[in-house]
Image (cartoon, rainbow, N blue to C red; front, side, top):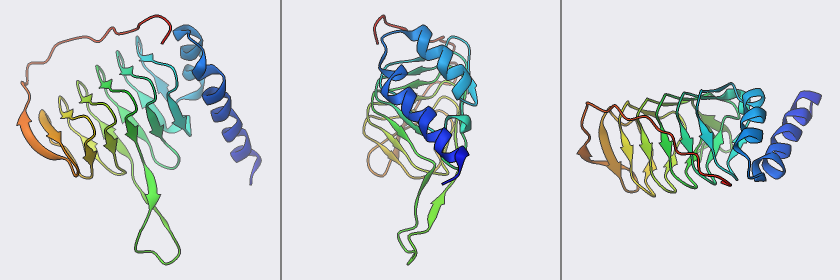
Length: 179
């Protein structure tokens, strides 16, 4: 294992075990601004969120990542637009294994999430997926393929169940104390 890999694991572990447990948005924000590829203005990350290879995670402005969210940027990038709400314990993955590979080979891809997206509680976004602007991913949904803009999806695997209005103009400001 290279020095760079060991250092990266230490930085991630220090965040998960120490900084990510502190009930202070300011301390977490300061650390994440240095650790992530981008930490947008007025973005809030609650306690117990996990980031794998943070330099590949790019958060836009006014995002809210609720407790227990996992963002896996191990080999590929995760880019998230502005005004994105991610529910508790949601997971965004960029890397997995090819189940048909006799060598258990890695397979994955970048994940792109547009602005004004709402991802529900315990949703799972799989590698290589793009979620279009204004889309909604229902609680517990497993997203295996791209979601068109302003489409509401739910289920396992996620399927379209509705449309969202296109004139979204809200601004997220959720930053509760001690979370």
